[in-house]
Image 1 (cartoon, rainbow, N blue to C red):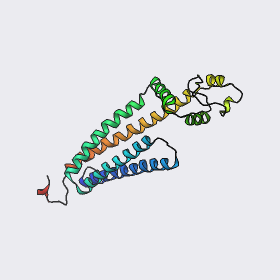
Image 2: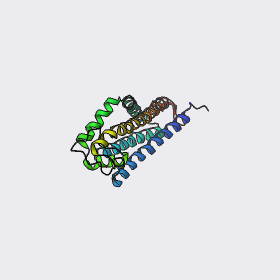
Image 3: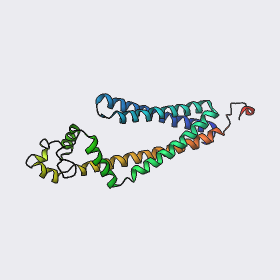
Image 4: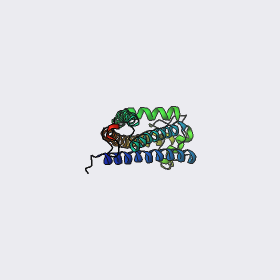
Length: 214
């Protein structure tokens, strides 16, 4: 029996959806852990991660049940959802990979000036050993007195010499590249799922009544 037979397609589809279930559980668990450990303070970020995990879990369960029962309707909807997910995830991943430096700097600047609290700014300065954002020590920025590099420098000298923008831009660039790469890879597993589902739907179960197929 070759790899293209009914049982091989069924087992491959079950394995793929089992992988999706594991990934969804990891997403939900990481988000929940981050919430209680206060690693992520933004509830919108946590909610988004949990929502993605729950949605992926539901889709994987639909695919798993459809594969086990060879249910034509469930497999059809599962295939349609995977196509939509593939297109969305591919475009988002490509957007992450081609995000320009100027756009990254605009996002960082907006976040620093309008969203980050002084406590967050101070934590960033200490962690990355930098002062202010782009070389200008704004009165609204926290003091750089706790920054190691600034011990023997004035606030303005340290802000000019060691701004935080470069470190934050490098961090964001690496994060976007990682997210884009992983997302692009994962999107092609969804394309594989579409192919397996399409082939599996059109295969006859050797144990079933041939007259009952479709």
